[in-house]
Amino acid sequence: MIYVAHEPHPNSRLDTSLLDGEDWQPVFLASYSPTFSPKDAIAEARKALADFDPARDEIAWVGGDPLSIGIACTVATEICKAKGAPAYVWLKYERPKGDLPHRYVPVMVPA
Image (cartoon, rainbow, N blue to C red; front, side, top):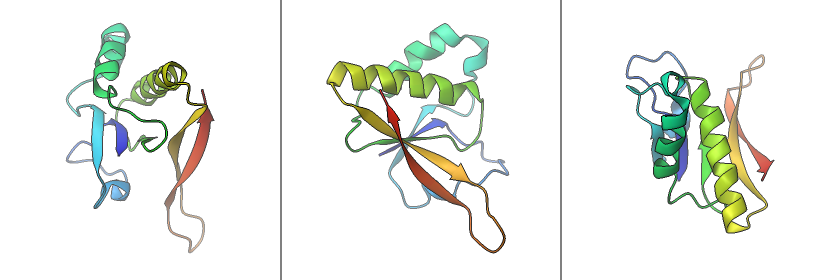
């Protein structure tokens, strides 16, 4: 499962191809902005990530409120520590260079 920090807005110009054909779930819906109430947003992220399994799931940011990825990663780290997992995977976007296509690269984030 890919947990997307902020659900892409339908009119987004950002690259959401990472999600094509993948099993994914948003941590925050497109209509929600964690910036307005970070404390409440942390509680919402804990609910959304309740089934997060650091051994098989990944976190990604494909746009939206920038604070969403910080909160999602903070909560993923909490979950890792609670489960005794050493790390989780964050999918980092790499911009195209020359003729190379864009891509998402897995990065192991230590807990």
